[in-house]
Length: 156
View 1 (cartoon, rainbow, N blue to C red):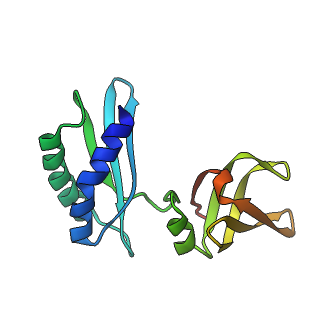
View 2 (cartoon, rainbow, N blue to C red; view 1 turned 120 degrees about the vertical axis):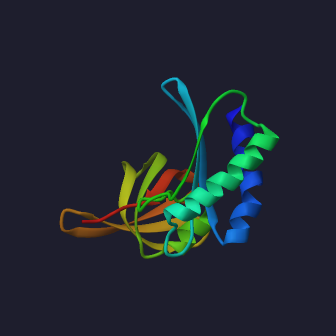
């Protein structure tokens, strides 16, 4: 059910976002308490503002009402992914070379399942993440297919 909602939402959002020069970052369809939320995260170089989110929400809401992929009540939220945006695709990794990232793995590499550091390289199959252990700098070579979750990470 939720994969159908996500796929339909993606198909309906694509032409709206393309027309406005926006990028679809992620879609979530989740239940929180007794309520269902359909969350659409959008972005562009320089970030999106609340007006852009509002326009996309209005136009997408109309299309969702017509297509009716969701049975029952839900809340539609359109927003920026924020400063710790998820990295969902290989293209996201390529675009964020040199950025600080947090990566969680399906299984450990050298005894570690989580890495936070600078994304140094990405060749489409392996991400090299430079991280610190105390005062030493190390490089983790992380196969893309072993990554469970990845996002940008804010450094202080």
